[in-house]
Length: 507
Image (tube, rainbow, N blue to C red):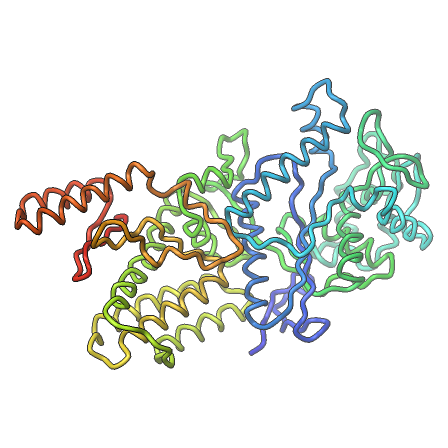
């Protein structure tokens, strides 16, 4: 079955046909590292992580590139604010290193796969690899760019079909544009390829004098260096369509490169209907969320909306997403208990398993439709519970339930879901941990330590469960019920089975 992708360039859904069969070259705009990563950054990284995972699942060999902007006006401003009086060059390096490290930490906590290549802007202007300077010189030689007082600008009049990505007429864009004070360009729409050095700011040598690259040039240069002059998928947020991605196309085509074939853009995130901003007091970092909820809750929150659409974050909606993760937990616990009564062996998937798996793939083939894919996953959970309720005496009952769990985990891994239920224990002796605590993503680092029960709470639960088991053994049912109620008030549910007492968090 073919995969279809909505292409922002053509504004229609197209069958995905990569340049080379079963090989995908993918470039995603990464962070400008000047502040703590927030949940908007998380959604962007997660969306393209899911795309990458699904393409890999479908048998494609994906080369995934995500760049880092480590020199920029915002970084320079942050360095001046955080390191007053310090050498600006070293301050900029400290800021970019600090926030890139934070970004990497958060990506690891989210279970986002590392990119195959993560180029930094500053790596492409240094003396041993001045590829940005060479690219700019190409544009000058082709008559697409001009030097003006140490700056270099792209001549927008030389771009063919400028505005084709953002679907804007150049005349309309020009009517609302002005040349800012200090700019030395010929046309308001011309954009900087190279900025002449200001006193104290980071700068590199070039044929036009010391300076640093403009923002737009870096992605054209890095993508062509790593992926070639034409590649399959370019991704980013809707806010990057204009001017960033429009200008990338103009300069790349100006240099004679075909550039990206499929453009994917995701919708933006708001907080309670408002744009996220520190001034509004609604700036929510990735660490803020993962200190309160498991990573799967955040991911399911994201998955409930199509990637191209907007998503509005509220803590109430995140709580609902968290509650839905517990449907997986309860089913896996139930299957785990069933497996203790019988040896399992390989079995052909039951019809309800195959139906839901096929629905999942159909949804993902349709422009990575995660709401429908997620619905198929929950339908499989429901159907498995129904099967276990109604067919407990069926031949291969345990094997089919086990196969359902395997498929849920397999499909969940495509969505980057970890299914890390380390807080659930089955306890005939109050010491054995549930086998369902294994993460489905070997490359990720679970964030469960930030939201799961403390060691003191775990010790108290184990002690109370052991005390209750003793009470039941002595037929002291009042004490047994009192302990059950006490634990329930703490948000812990007990389930008595023939293999002992199990506990889990309350839904």
